[in-house]
Length: 458
Image (cartoon, rainbow, N blue to C red; front, side, top):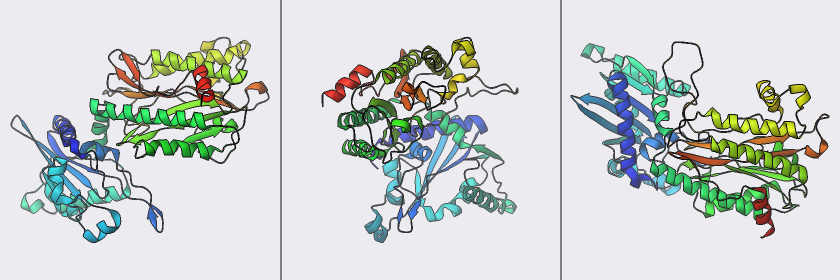
């Protein structure tokens, strides 16, 4: 619970959520639970990881907890009550599983008004829901969550003869929280810079240690060592360490494939630090020197990333960096005869027809934050009565995105064998600011010459 010293940050976020609830429905109740523990086998659980929305509002990392916000307007003043339901102190269980904060210490430690044992959740919720205009929950979260909501509402309805009414409106709390999480504050960006720096060091370590004959899992072990040795609590996602033909499998897991001289190794890996993800991809030659065809496709991919970076700035849409990268990649595919101008007519036709998707099948960016594919709409949040697509999101300061073009060439009769099994992706993390963007993950080299020099000067 290293982050609970920043209780004022979480208080401010709860206040911001409450203001949105009041603006939307005049107030009400929001119920947000953390993630459950999950059994790995009969005798142990997976390492516990909190729910991101819950943690965003509390800074509390223990399982078995629920946050209830009661927001109302008293004249011109906002009245907010934060109620936490958490595991009670239990000296016997704490011997086995670790110290619990407990409801007695939670209010002062977390900056909350009230805290209770989670055993009292059902009883207390029926009291808190009484005569509230609206309830904000995660819609269609799970069958169990739906069951509990029905139970709470039934309890309140049972008090009708006493003049008590249940909420008459049901709203999605995620829509409000996720819009908040899309914009990172200075505290969040500082953590993400540190996470990216740790991940960059891990990528450098992998490049320097890599040599022909190693296995993919051995490089994965070097990444994990650097993450934990530098203070990161976990990986942000399962590390991709893909040698040779495996580099053309987008979500490949590090396996036992031998890394061979003359082939490439693609590593897509990032740590999670204090609840925030980093996400870096680099592709490098196993023996430290790119072949001609590898270097050609690498330089095309890097040029595509640079084009996307140029377009990553406030006022541009989320799709403009992708469109810039796509144009460079498609032109490169035409130049190297992986696509044929005689058949397609122009780079515009190659893009319009989707011919490039054979070699580039994903978008160039995604949001990054507490989750590696972070929350937030990719379309503008506007009300519309038409069936037309909403416009793509306009980039603004405080948003964080990845920039990750790639090329993946699988064996085929109509493809030059020199390019077979070359998979390249280059990914960096970009914080949108007033002047453009800050690449917080460039602590690891990205130019081909710099990568070769790093691998030679071990």
